[in-house]
Image (cartoon, rainbow, N blue to C red; front, side, top):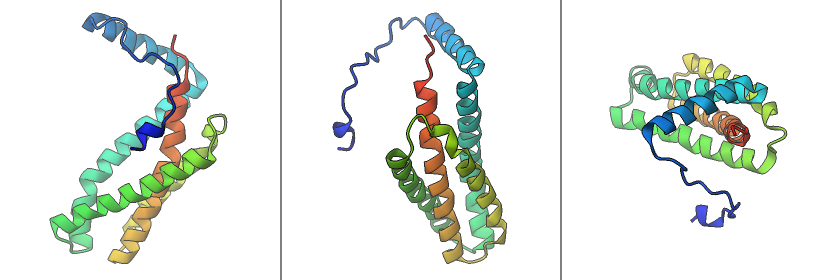
Length: 157
């Protein structure tokens, strides 16, 4: 339902050529251009680290919750949902308050997210874990939405 409210920008998103070799060439061409562009480098590097760290947290977070917080596997998995709620809230805030022009200004939020991950070392109660994970998610959403927008906006033609 949210997607129905997104205005049509008139951009044609159809793939011009579906030949796998052409698609591979196009990927490498765009990739090379983005890494040569200063803002493209910032966006690619930060979003790559973000998604890699997120995947690592998803894998390592459950055992930590089970051992440290003595949660069952199903309850430990629910903590990932807490991060998701925070990420959604942060994404909404970023969409509302961060313009494309100011998107590089959210890099400190990514640093804050990383520092909050270290705070998890000192978490030994469920309420504290929920609070810190909501903050991590909030920072994540506020950080990654402008960085993804910046990446999508870079011209690779």
